[in-house]
Image (cartoon, rainbow, N blue to C red; front, side, top):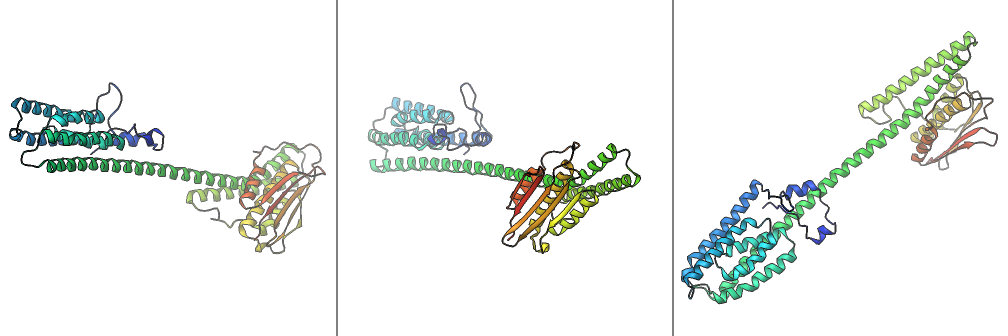
Length: 416
């Protein structure tokens, strides 16, 4: 059978232990509730209701056939019995709207009408399906309690008292147990559907979180890669703008740096877009830089006009784990970019030291700038991104002004 009414009287429902989606409740309990609202039944509901009504009528007709055989039953009482039974069968159509009221009304009816036996069983079944067990215990217990009184006043023709009572009790217990089984299955189905909905929602949240983390990683990589190139473009373009008296050689050198930086930036951007399109990892495409590429980074910065000195290096940079080396390279790249933007023309020192088991220490320090520094636009997220990158690698990053007025970035990364 299809349930059509929420168990709003259940303590579990009232205390909020069952928080079911409205769509599930509407699906399993399709009838609208509330005063003045008409009952809406599905085709299956109509079929089930008609089956219950037909069962109640069939039991009533079978009981009406033996009314004449009951000793001491007057014709007026037989007619009254049948009229009450007919009304009880008609009331079966109200079992969904008022299951408790119908079951309570059937208790005294079962005491005076034999033809209402089918309607009594239908009401007990409906009560067990739509209401908690405490209703079934009280109302069902009252119905079973009046059964001996009925068979004592109106014994069944051809059956002993105990046999008649035992059959009636077995029928009632069977119907109530069947209703409780249907109710438990419905509650299990509700619980499983609710868990499925929650599992789908959690899966969507996990997917969204994974996408967000991937976007953050891509954004961090794009910032670290492109900021270095684009800063060269900005600095040299600014130099050409503010130095109209520059010599032909200086203009040519700055134009070459701008062209090379633009080419490298486009190449890096193509690789990142290729990773996004192919759904590959960050290691796809061109090999990622490691600590061994630190010399090339320093040389590239020198060619761009920076005064960079590599004062310390690891003896065997190839022995540094690839992930640690790539993190150190990106930190040095961003630190050199910041020095070029905020302290142009100053001396910058880069130092890398460490050993397996002791960790890797990378330091980038620049001297205080001389004179007024031209404004170079930036997002202000570079140092934040470097801190996050170092933290994700299991290390730490410190940055701040030096006593001489310069700026220092120091990263400590694990080296197993």
